[in-house]
Length: 150
Image 1 (cartoon, helix red, strand yellow):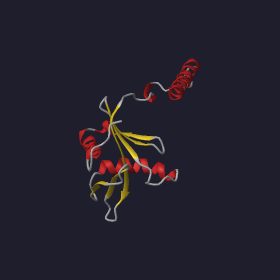
Image 2 (cartoon, rainbow, N blue to C red):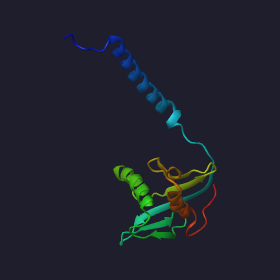
Image 3 (cartoon, rainbow, N blue to C red):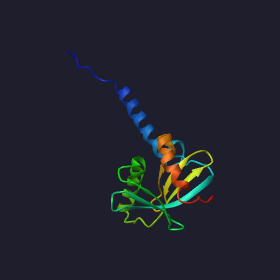
C-alpha cells in the first residue's frame, strides 16, 4: 500500500503562510498599526489616585494631589477594581515600584475610561468591560472631590 503524503507544494505554501503571518504581526507591533495602534482621544477629565491596603482588607483610595482620603473600598467588594489594580501592581512589584506613585484615571472625549500606571506605562481600558465595571471606576473620578480637567 503506497504511503499517503502531503505534496511538497502544499508544505511550502503552508510555510510561506506561517512566515507571512509572523512578519505581519511583528511589523504591526514595530510600526504601531492594527491592534497595536495607539488609541487617540483628548482627555476631558483626569484624576491621580493612590491605592493602599487597609488593615481590614479594604482599599484606601487617596487623591494623589491633595493626599485626602477619597473613599474606602470595603473588604470583599469592588472586585473589578481590585482585579485591575492587581494586574497593574504586579508589574510594579517586579519593577520594585511602591504604592506612593499614583495611578491616573482618565476619561477621554471618545468615551473611553482608562486606568494608567505612569510608572510602568501599563494601562487597563475600563471601557472594554461593560457598564457595571465602568461605573465602579467612573465614581472614582469624582468621589471625595471634583476631578481636574487637563
